[in-house]
Image (cartoon, rainbow, N blue to C red; front, side):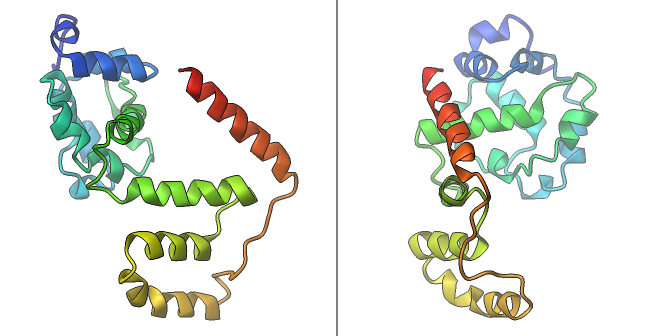
Length: 190
């Protein structure tokens, strides 16, 4: 077991994770069985398995957790959550850790926040993803030398009709923007 009810009082980090995650109090019931890490299709890319992350959270190792790549490698497939015998909302905890890492300026090791921002900017504007724009904007501002390496793949995708050079908007993009604006407003209240 990662933690009991007393550990929540000893680890401020554990308290924060529990408070910021719907159903997060279940993390104290982790059996350390390893079902989560064994289920993860991207587990080999993680600095730590989810069960190790839970032990680190209980041990108040905030910086080590928030500076790790574990939550950024989570592909949100929910296999870990579905297979957890304790029904711990593992994927939701990974989202909580991402938000905390960004908020506390500890996400520097990962490119994911910059890529996510680029993606959401296009969704906000057009209501959908725009792969060419995401790739060029993200690479230009974050990894300009990598753009040269990606040119061949981009040309191949374009030749096969898999890469549009201009974005397209969804119908009723104003309705989507209203939903997004309301979600942003509600998240500021938290």
